[in-house]
Amino acid sequence: MNLLASLERGLGCEGPLNAEAPLPALAPEAVAGHQHVLFWLIDGFALDYLSDTPVLRGDLFRQLEAVFPSTTASAITSVFTGVSPAQHGLLGWRTYLPGPRSTLTVLPAREADCSGNSAGLSTTELEQRIRPPLLLDRLPRATTVISPAAIAHSSYNRLMSGSARILGFRHLEELPALLGRHVRTGGEGPHYTYLYWSHLDHLGHEHGPDSTQVRNHLAEIDAAYAAIIEQLQGTGALFLTSTDHGMRAVSRRLNIRDAPTVSGCLRHPLTGEPRAAIAHVKPDRHRDFRRAMIEAFGASVEVVPMEEWLCGRAFGSGRPHPELQARAGDYLLFPDGDSFLVDPVGDDTGPDFRGAHGGLTREEREIPLFRRDLRALRQNGGPST
Image (cartoon, rainbow, N blue to C red; front, side, top):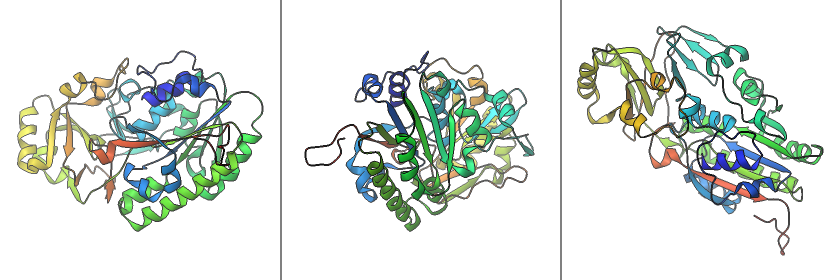
């Protein structure tokens, strides 16, 4: 959130909403001094991946901590709005909406009832559900959002992009030339470009963070980063690269529906994240729920009253979303380091992960920030950092 505060203020945001102070190492004035600022978010880039990305590692600028929950739906919504999860109210892959008593899966823009019957939402319908304060519409500079073609014009992406120009691409190796053209022919005046890449996160979930598939793709990302730097050299751009969360290996899938004494206490299916699940409990079943969780899962799942969590501002600072307390439910469920929770409802069988995130461990929350200043050259001919 400190990085986003630096960007919000440095990009000249009209009416900044981020309650945090700017990142001390990246003063807003340093951001404002660049005509073109680019922010590449590589979904699921764990801090432990640095050993496989030597070019990126050479530009490591700071170590940051992801928002909580440490997951894409919450973190990228913070990037698009400039505000914390407490302010925008999206508390994980799934968020409970108290009005219709439904579950919103915001990234694919789907809404489901208690039985798991779901339907897709248009951009307009999604906006009615979440009403985000769009950062890109508050900036006094031209803006562009560049995403994989499969999601570039999705309901979520169109909504969050606001008035920004949207560009799609199909393959990672297209990015260097695309960004080179974009920055060099972008016209006069200040510009902000947000770039997103998601495939690393998919591989981490499917194969695990230590898999050959992840390591091979990290080499491809590192090569793309080097090629982007070459394309942008001398443009005067500020190129920032970071991520939304880390990734840790998991092997135990805990199904809440295998414990009927637990699921029978719920007034709504679990929301939040498999590594930080939110439980909405029937008013008269709290004691039964806590006892049933111990009997079913023992020390494998920590049960934390949500009241304690909200008092500690764990979802971030700033004016809280008017529905925050209702959406946050009654308890946070934290599986142990090797486990994740699922709650299959209807035709949704829930995920089967080899890697996961969303929780509180170092692997999930500690993330890198890379910086490359492309205004000048070093004495030895290399680009400045």
